[in-house]
Length: 147
Length: 142
Image 1 (tube, one colour):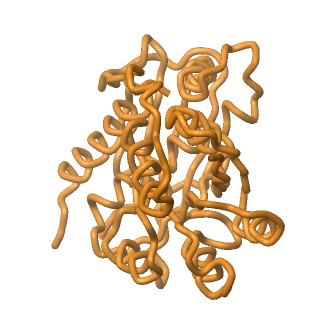
Image 2 (image 1 turned 180 degrees about the vertical axis):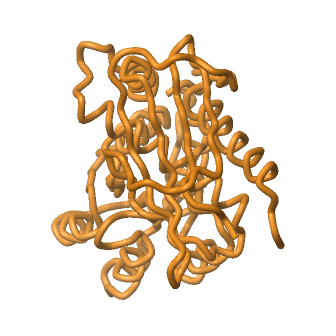
């Protein structure tokens, strides 16, 4: 069954909202906001054998990453290391990717990889979701398209 | 009675969160942590564990491979294993069911969902368990 791009976008939005509502008790606002200060980027490869590969990328204001980590780990900002903050964001990306795949690919054709920090190689963007969390930016991009 | 529970997840953040939820059970729990399947197998070799909570997508050894190794070990084959993973697709669920997992919780989850699932598994495997209600007034926050 072919899932249209608007349907995929809706599923992505739902996947992101569910992660933030259940794990952070936050409701993300689908809204444009200018990125502030330093940003953290990470991505997770999603493979469909034999040769199709997608990449789900997440870009987040570092200040927001710190605040989410405080919320998630129950620590205060001063006690949070960069590694803990990065680990929290990587786990957010992992949950968003898994949740999205559960909806879009119930038969399990696509295989979820391991999230890593960094910027992925270029690719056509098929989904771009931007969120505003207390005036901080979080962007999720899907590079490559789901056939 | 104290329980030894092993958390296997390559995400340090997720291990911290699960540890906090284990504290919400009101039981006396010694938490053991492993960042990979091979680390988990070493720990299982060294000490008694009452229950394993494992992720599925991990580098080098997946959660499914880890459960297979546990089931193929005569001393560990009855050890209750619960999967806590983003993976919720049918084929994975079927695979883990075949391996006799005691429970499967999909991430994201609410803290009370995990707490209740852990208590149910411990209760099923330990007749004398008396989960306290000491933390029942918590609102479920991490």
